[in-house]
Length: 190
Length: 102
Image (cartoon, rainbow over all chains, first blue to last red; front, side):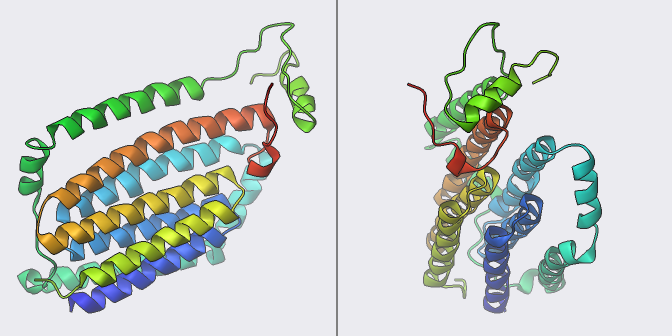
């Protein structure tokens, strides 16, 4: 049974990824990307990596995708966004991801209903992962914490608004030079 | 042992990685490029989990955790750069950002 579920989930993952890279609208692509991540989470569960499956849903499909949503929403504002939102509420936009999510949900129901008899892969539980993580891999954990700190500082620094001193000239070429003139107009909050 | 063989898992992982690579190469929207990179990270994590499941060891999941950390840091910095690029150039087209200073 696990093999059938594996094939269905693989098909969902690949279909969602293909749809993701062919969408013209970033938010539509994001919906399919979340479905692809959820499908891979189900695959982790089928392979017996329950802890990784939970992390995939919470961190990847939850936290990291929220960052994408924030940035996409920050980059378009005003009336155009409202028109877009109205267009997005049409069923054609969300029916695909919803169907894929329903397939994954049905798979989850099948697994839960079958109880302990679901022959998933060799189960490596969270306790084993934790024991090894804080044993031989302690240095890797420290390195990961340093990496996250660097990422935090970098993201904070990079996302700050640009402050252009008076009289300072941006040396940009072509179209970008005209845009930099627009940026330096007084009263414009950039 | 599981019915799912390691070959099938690695094949799926390779397919997802290639799809992500196609996305990075073919799309020109910076946000879409970052999203395709997420798919590639995810495919690499899937390969680790498949191998960890094959040998019944926890190392695969630990490598996945490290990939998750890397992806989180990469997305934070990458989206910060995207915001800065949009503020300066008012576009997200990677092809229009071909001028360097100096």
